[in-house]
Image 1: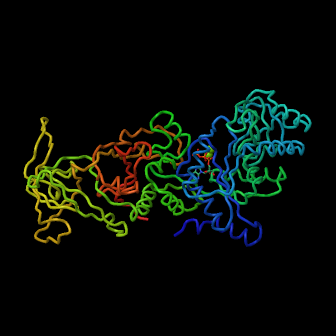
Image 2: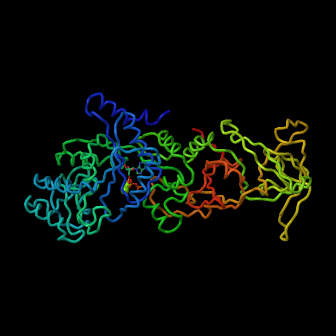
Image 3: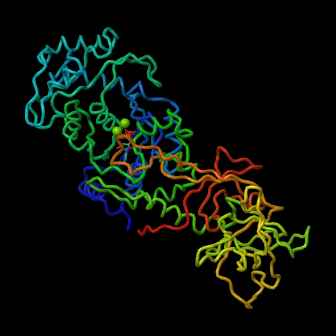
Length: 548
Ligand code: ATP
Ligand code: MG
Ligand code: MG
């Protein structure tokens, strides 16, 4: 199935084109540059770009930058990088802050038409007089000022005569409307704060409900897609377009925002994690940001497929994070070379293997994709295996290395445990084994069978590496939509092991994502990894119970 192909917004667009209501589809992705994008934004990006692409239309990347207190250049550039990385090319890069002058002029038009007024109630008073679902609001005492007085007041607001919060510009609509959004909403507020882009040019800023429809109309956007919480703002959106006499008329459509299990999905919460130092930055691999997912090793293709499969719905729901994991496995399965890495090493000495000798064994790079070819891996007297692939007193059905039982070394030989060496603390420090040269992998040996196959790395040729494994940032399942109750941080959200990889793989393979046999997919960390000491992030483990 293709979620985007069957979505109801697509049906609306098809009809609009058929009926000639629009000549060309123009959508926009309108982030506020007040943080990094997360996986929820990815859904909106894919939806907007895919819809336009499907109908030969265009998409704008527009910074909805109308709040000087929270926005920053760093965020704007990071957002551009993320959208590009996801594989999309915008037709135009736009900034709401470029439209401030036109928005101001349109506000004066509203004043002249008797559709807006300067109100001196405090924010608290405005909230208190808006009424409730059952009670109408109370008109502001400033509601019936003359247009001349309002124009004068509004110009003086712009000139910086008044303090923050002293006055606002409000639309004059209907204080008794059953839709509270229409009870004289605020259009402009005073904020004496430099804007990252407009600098000190303005000290009044338009509110979202006024700015957004104008931004869409100015750019000729035809289908303005937003999340469900704006559904009951739509009458106001249409009012602004009409009252401001915009020459082009965009329409707003809503879809359910993405919520995902075990995932914080609000910029505010994510920002707090960064500022409190809980994570290593916005691109920490534990973060559900696009930058974090990229650093962890997610592919753009997996995220796009995920966004499409989640589809477009009219009611909020919770998506299982394992669905995203499923798609990254699918994306990596045939392209990631499959190599061996030992995360928690235990030394094995093969007593009957000649000291100083090294041989090269052939190993396929991807058992499901022969096109990736083969490589030669070294084998010698000392190797590393996983600590938990050896047990001295194993439970029943333990088919790995244990005294008196043979096990197969992947791509190599059968070995048998002869002796266990302990350290001063009584912990196993080495296992001494013998190998049977007859059992070489690929030699056609059929003399006897073993039940277990374990992976290993040649000690002499291995390269040390750090492996980072991740768990959710919070211990408990998060609630819908990302508001912060008291949630406990997971002390195990990051685990680091120092182990070994096949040294040759670093030199020979350009790929930086691998499947480590039995461990899962790992991606070299772009910040921490060096040539002499690679650092790998686990993208995802191999198995999942998740069914699509
Ligand atoms: P947050 O609530 O996480 O701070 P936001 O909605 O304030 O995000 P914006 O920069 O305003 O962030 O959002 C840009 C676009 O992304 C908007 O069109 C918004 O509807 C959409 N979007 C944000 N979060 C989600 C989500 N979880 N699922 C789908 N779309 C989303
Ligand atoms: Mg926002
Ligand atoms: Mg929001």
